[in-house]
Image (cartoon, rainbow, N blue to C red; front, side, top):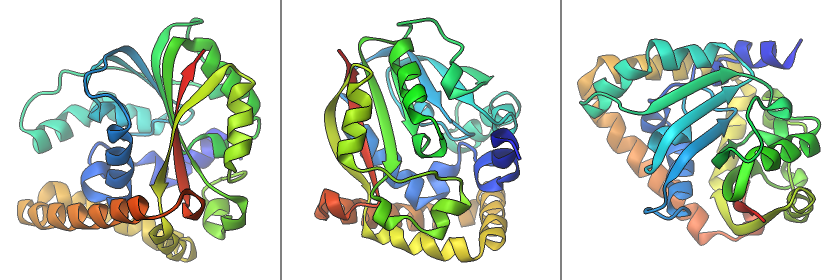
Length: 267
């Protein structure tokens, strides 16, 4: 099975949408933590999200003029041209003005010019790529001097579980290995932070019932969009659970994290 087919058949990836932030405590936790790591006044004329699925972080960042959305699977990219604007209006109550450019492609062969991008997001993607060295060299190639990269990865091979295997992880990373990989491509770490703490261990339950988990997520998306009372209640639940997850990260030590994040800059 090709990598593209794997992720198009894996509904937890291919069916993600803009509303994941509002229904998933994990995604809200991750996006909120990342947003605190970036200067609120900074602008990014051209930003690139690699492995974006249908719920790109760029949809939630201020200061982005043009959003380039790349994924190896075609199915999630259709969402941006067919249904995204409807979901945005239903939740935000106004028309979306984001300049979105979705494209199907391979992170190891990026269809962008050298030094053309101001910001790159690569969230929970590197661990899915067998040749991560080549992927990182491509990131460095298309990034402008002093451009920024936001990366998140699962942390510590000692925490590798059936859940990692189920969703196509080749590895978990150690901090020293990450630093060495990026330094070889002229990228320096500006900041290191936790993304998911010890509470993330609860997701191992999902690995035992993958089909049921996907069915429940699909049902949750449908109820959230169709039932306003349910949406109100779930917004509260999602906010509280995400707050608990963020607190768990804040109070924990990096070595206890299940996922970590980095902000990198090109020298």
